[in-house]
Structures are given as C-alpha cells and as structure tokens.
Image (tube, rainbow, N blue to C red; front, side, top):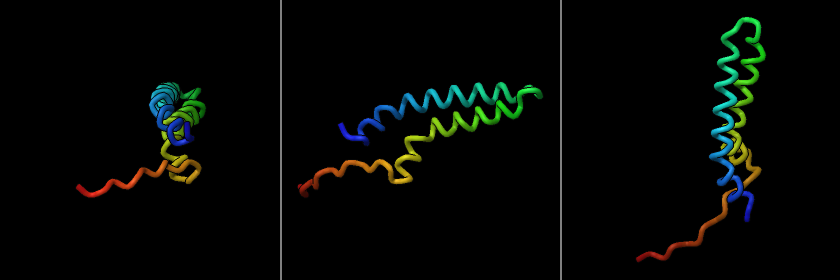
Amino acid sequence: MTAYQLLQMLGYALNIVGLVVCIAGLTLARHERHRLVGRLLAALGFLIAASPVLVQLLGLVEPVPTGVVPPP
C-alpha cells in the first residue's frame, strides 16, 4: 500500500475528526472566558480536516501515476 492510498483511506476519517474538533472549538469560543482556547481548537480542527489536501499540496505525498489508456 502506497502513502497516497493510505492518505485516501484516512482522508474521510480526518475530515470527520477535524470537523468535530472545529465545531467543539467554535462552541467553546462563544464563552468569553474560553475564547482564545476555543479559537485555537477551531484552527487545529481545520488543520486536521485539511491535512490530506495540505500534504498533497506541499508535495509530501505524490499520487500514483496511472497507466496510459490506449485510444479506442
């Protein structure tokens, strides 16, 4: 299994976990006492959810080249 295939499989889980962390951070940020912690938690959730795309954007994981399809 290549790193690209592993990233594709983990992408959905990372999106869901990041979304939950982000929503928890935004809910926490509504209270004046916990505003900074909530904002940091929301930013962390966004980074978790966007990590599959960011890893590909930075070139850490490259897609597997597909074979050339002959014309019909």
